[in-house]
Length: 249
Length: 278
Ligand SMILES: Nc1ncnc2c1ncn2[C@@H]1O[C@H](COP(=O)(O)OP(=O)(O)OP(=O)(O)O)[C@@H](O)[C@H]1O
Ligand SMILES: [Mg+2]
Image (cartoon, rainbow over the protein chains, first blue to last red):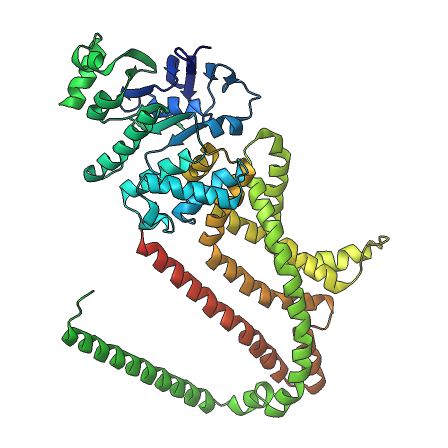
């Protein structure tokens, strides 16, 4: 594949139900390398489910997820641990490990999964933490961090595995409004560095600012997508207009 | 700097001192009343002679202490085995893949059965039953079978304690670990178990204390541990003081353990109050 149209992620026709309740209904999504794609949609429209399927935390009922044109996440025999080394995910609730310091949280996966030596992992972790303004918090336990610091630490922990694709699932929803900015700034910086990003968010202003493309999820499919200006200023579908009218007030 | 009002602090100190004095006084008073009341009962001289006889106590104590070493040995062998086996069983019961269904069923049946049967019955059945089979190469030593029975019985209990601990770790922790590429085994080893064990230290210590006492149950098979020794002493002198001495030996060991368990529990709940879970 050539670099211009390099599809890092290709989701085609995936279906997923929970107890006979279909959440994803033949959803398609295409993400090129270095793109930032933002998922919007009502609560329950399947944004989290989609993100969890992409790194194999949920299995799909039908359809295909292809990573980098050659790794088929949805193939039953795939080694999901290998997929997850290349796809990072950060959750709304941080999920830092409370019994480890911030530094240990960040070092765990590089050491145990990639086999990086302790010293190298420590240096890399400290450098990453410093980049996100957390050098002073490296030796603290997570319960000593503010929400914004905890979420930035969770981002650093995922970055330490050097993923090619980052998934963010409403990473600012649990935060005090005053702390949302510092976390979004971290994401903005990753986007500028060229990391490929798929992000579910209710921060419409941020989506307008940073996204290359906005996808509106409705009843388990991407009902409408396009550049942020188009989606926010002149949505074509009635459902998109209704949704935006509700969230933008 | 935290500003502390000196007047308030002095008041707090005075209150604390007064509380300590009142507590001490009431404890001493209560003890005196009990001692006086008991020593006034009509049967007290006889009870004192048969249960609290100084000479009997002094003469039986060395033998009892020596016999107690066997209890300590049984405990020290049984406890690590119980910890290892129960952890394995608890982990087995958390495996979700259908391949492990047979293992899971066996573990569940084992726990159900051994939690349901009184420990002393397990000791009887193993201690008298297995040697009676006269199998080649199978030990007939009652201490061996008594210890094995304790291990079987306690493993079932402790496995449930560990299972509760594993269940108390939020599923999102497992999800976060897996999403970083850690295998199921690594996720258990580095993320789930450290938190699970921390959550169950108090009940675990409780079971240790209980096991210390239950080493005396092996007496029914005949080996000379502290209870059996006390029985022998008591029947030769027609005096029950050795039983009291044996009880004191157990208490001397379990009370420090109990205080330690309380201390750990207090410290952990303080740490939990100190910060919300991230
Ligand atoms: N593990 C699960 N078991 C059963 N139902 C689930 C599970 N996960 C999600 N669901 C259901 O799937 C539907 C979609 O959930 P999902 O979390 O993907 O929505 P979402 O778009 O992320 O919503 P929100 O904006 O509230 O986060 C919901 O109805 C939810 O109840
Ligand atoms: Mg969600």
